[in-house]
Amino acid sequence: MARFWVCVAGAGFFLAFLVLHSRFCRSPVLRNFTFAVSWRAEEILYRLDVGWPKHPEYFTGATFCAAVDSLNGLVYIAQRGDNIPKILVFTEDGYFLRAWNYTVDTPHGIFAASTQYEQFVWITDVGSDFMILWLHGENGTGPAKFNIPHSVTLDSAGRVWVADRGNKRIQVFDKDTGEWLGAWNNCFTEEGPSAVRFTPDGKYLIVAQLNLSRLSVVAAPPVGSIGECSVISTIQLADQVLPHLLEVDRKTGAVYVAEIGAKQVQKYVPLNSYVPPFGS
Image (tube, rainbow, N blue to C red; front, top):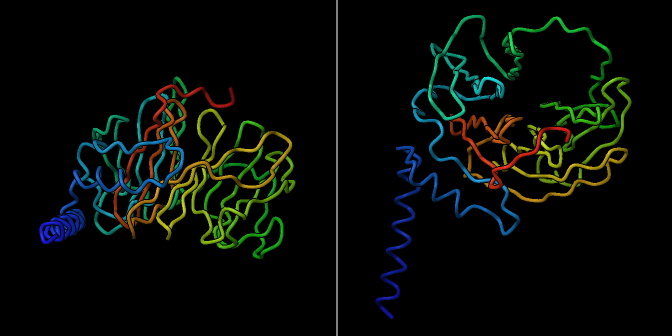
């Protein structure tokens, strides 16, 4: 019996050592271990790519957002802090390419898109020249009103999905007319969503909850119906990781999560290597 309790105490000491080592030394071994044991007993759809990026030491500030240029295989990271590069550029394999610090002060969101001939990166600090087709912006709790609208994405059916973080819900609008189509709040009783993106096949939404340090995979509703939110799988991150915004690679389905608490971006890849194109 004494030997049993000695083993238990030894295991507890080992786990405590790993936690402390991870917190202060950013151990990649523990990142793999803690992720493996943090999955809930649900369908597992993603795994953490523990080798991405190759050089995490380039994360020197609070990483607020990520964007993916799938055509050119590039990942853009925006971070905040004094006297640091605000934009970092990596390959999808995790190799650091370059950084810059001009025109950007305190980035909040970033979006990348490219054609065969040109590359575009939009950062919320800079502004845009887009024409406003419709606008909802009144503060409140009713339909089409917001309390900290934090993230927005578009599905293949022309519906705009808005993470209404302060109201603990996702609201849905028609992209052309701005008509309110419905809302989800049953999945967000503990905390509102901070980020929302669709998988390339359009079948799921990936949702981040900042203070819960949680990612959820939610089933997308069919065209013509919003219905109720249905969580398929969750990824419970370590405490105080604080996933702020995320982006999904439209080609590979990989999910890049900007964690302002951990001051890093992590990459999650689908367990199913084949990802159908968006809207198929």
